[in-house]
Image (cartoon, rainbow, N blue to C red; front, side):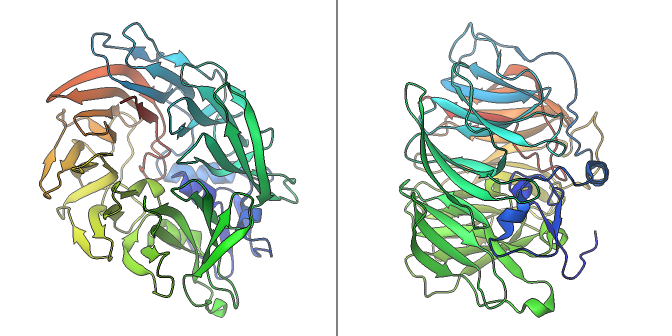
Length: 483
């Protein structure tokens, strides 16, 4: 793709989901209220042209691989966890601790996308699209209880970007278009979900920012604003009423006359102690950003210090992971939009010192730490391969889940046939148990469980899309451990 000077391809909310940067909204001028105003979904864009481009990336049209309904393949093995997963574009829930439980369908039409579990596991957020893909129709935010009851649409306005649960309470922050497709107006909405299912509306404030994330205490939100002429890109800390508490410039104002420049921070991941922020730096050119952007680390407690550059990678928040004690950050380094090659696990300490933890011929993704010490890092690793989509084959043959212990020793944690590939490591808090997805085809697989060195297939017929150049985002499964 060619980057044309002065023309910006918007739609970064899709990129944060792991979908293509070109979501269908194009603009020459950003406007005073920020990039978000222009990122709202617009039906007027040529969907056919967009889907044609996605097809070049290996079948990014969201036509799910149709097949049999998902089934629980092993009722003898129980797991203290709840799982949400997709199959044939629909959402299912299953309590893995109930021997007699079967996958419960939550949606019956359109397309469902998992957002995630609440902190206490009582609720699941998901986005439901009325069409068969994410590009021809808007998505709406829904909520459902863990047992599959009480499904309710949270807002009658289209949601844009990725909704986010508060880390401390059952409160969700999300952005909607409160205007029209011709005159979009982004609004940040906060709503609290009470135990009885009642949804209490909170603040609704202008979303005049590029991206946002919760602070670990759940009392504030960190936003990023874009750079422009005589305007640096910044972090802005705001309270839940939308009032600014502090502003942190991240760089000098860009020379916009040069055409291409660093636009804004995105995919922010704040350390659990609330002091450090790991993030990606988007350029004002989508095609350039699609092949890798700077990964930086900023200290909110020492704002006079410049951000530390850790590496270059694809701007997926799922590829940044902090230990619970805030001492180590795991991230995936490597340029080129293909997720099947040149992606390497690296670790950084609080001072920004980086250690490489990946063989040259491997490809790594999805780093996830255990919640309890001694912290073990789980991640997917396979042999790097050229991007080639074949629906009958997996994208990275022989890819397994690996583990890196507190001493730095690494070993494969799962075992499987070369014709399969393992994704989405979901370790129990202490790392003694593991749930993961094993693919036998590019868009088809099963939920597996490993404990005491033994693997068991639990659910067959889980399906989804390979995502943008095989990043497998958004995730097909979401796990909540009950203990």
